[in-house]
Length: 179
Image (cartoon, rainbow, N blue to C red; front, side, top):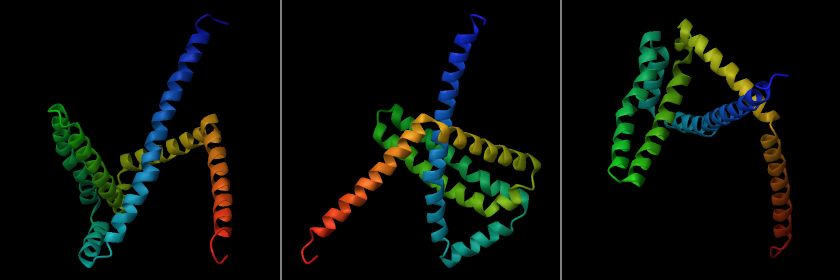
């Protein structure tokens, strides 16, 4: 075995671990941010004017749908730069609050627009390829995460926590007056 093989393998494991952590963070944001926020915006769309607007967006031609999908992300960029400027001026809490708010609003809006325009967007071959790559990558990352020791440990802890909580609730319900 080459003397360079072992350090190279160790380096690859470290890089792979960092990449897996970053991918897990992205997936965490998608699962715990994208879905609830887009569901919230979907509930807002029960209001008739927004329902009509969503119907118009669903029927938009592919190029208009692409613009509708990309414009909100681009429009929020100056707001994020402003937030960085606030941080630079020493207003860290305000700047971070602006970034978090912009991220929440952007995620909700872009997520809902993606749901409304996906059928039009996949007509662009490059978009369909990118979306296919993202979905396949997401599955590979989730599979690697589920096989990791950290994931399995977290699942065991979650199962134990839920069992403890059920037992605790059962005990507290028997102590209630009139039970």
